[in-house]
Structure formats: C-alpha cells, structure tokens
Length: 155
Image (cartoon, rainbow, N blue to C red; front, side, top):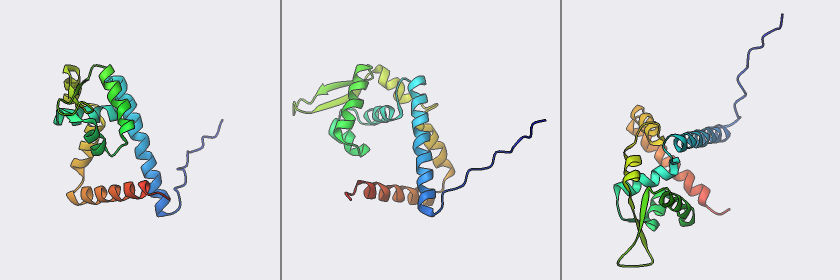
C-alpha cells in the first residue's frame, strides 16, 4: 500500500518586502488570468475594456488624455487603440480643431462591451472594494501611488 504524503504549504518569503512583492506578483498573475478569460468571453482584454470604459464615460477623449489617465506611455496605448478600431469597437475621428489629434468614440459593439459587467476585472475589483473600509481603500491607493513613483524613478 502506497503511503500518501500530505502536501506541505510552501515556505513564505522572509521579510516584509519579499512577502509584499509576492502578493503583488500574485495580483499581477490574477489580473492576467482574468484578462485572458475576458478575451475569450467578451472579445477584449482587461486593458482594452478599461480603454472602452474611459471612452464610454468621456466620448471624444483624445489618445493623449487616455494615456495620461491610465499612466501608460502613448506608444503602448497606440496598439490598444488600433486593435479596438480593427475590432470595430471604437471609432477614430480626426479632431476638427487640430488635425494632428484624434478623438475616440464607441461604436454599437463598444457600447455593448462598455455595459457588460459580469466576468470583468472591474466586477472583481468592485466586489473587493465593497468589503474594504474607506480607510483601507485610501491607504492602499496611497501605497500603490508610492510604488508607482518609486518604480518610475531612474536608478
């Protein structure tokens, strides 16, 4: 008769910094998994849906503003916008006042995805936020902002 070995919990990283980083990596992985699931079920990834949500809230939003709101480089956003245009989810229109600028609006398909709530990263975040106190949310937001500043700092 074979002996069944119980699976032991893996050791935790030593120290507050490594334990915190482990949780960040777990969060990043969970975001990627949910984003891939959204791509299969909704036809868009988490970042693409976030762009759709922003454009849905502010039609005519220029790319520069979207990049600034998301805190990403404009070249990163260019690929997301191009895919959404190709998928027929957003419409790119040249700004009448400045032909170098483009503004974006949702198509009917984009509006459908904008209204979708089930199975999204946003829905999961909303559920977690409802369980957190305002103080926890404020402190977490502040810490995340500090991390972004530190990670963006040149060495």
